[in-house]
Length: 230
Image (cartoon, rainbow, N blue to C red):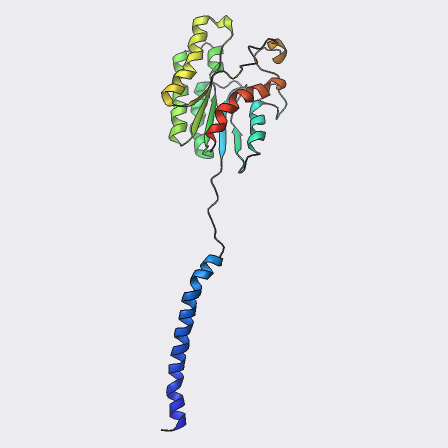
């Protein structure tokens, strides 16, 4: 047999051996390449607190950024990862108005926590407390169904509204919180409305606290809110 024939037959065999060696090398290298490759993890879901309130949360009569919600936002922004606050409060808002706006807010923001600070305007207008309670209950249920934890912010009325009406109004927040297993701030204005120097802590209308009182409002909300933020 001529040398040229042997060379011709050996060439395919050598090519096959080289191909197998390459596949074997790649198989050994694959785990190392997988470990070395950058891993793209999904971003953590945004953490967000939605506040649905009235003028006490909407900075009525105050400079922007001085109300208790803004103070809370500044504190939560320091967390890692930071927590966003959406303040959907409107001066003059009632529980009926909040109930009508809440579904769109839940769908848009997908909050982790919902703070409901509503009811005072219902009472100031003499609206039936049964309707106020039903609206708060419906909002709490809707927020919970959307996966949010709920903080109900309680309120009290001045004595001139009558003891019976005032007691019934105060108790409805606790009743809704208990029925829905929601968190409760008993009285947003504790330490302000009942302070010895209360006259010096309110605006001229005697309804809305001055800016210097709002850190106290946050101090009433914070111990209830903070444990709910994972």
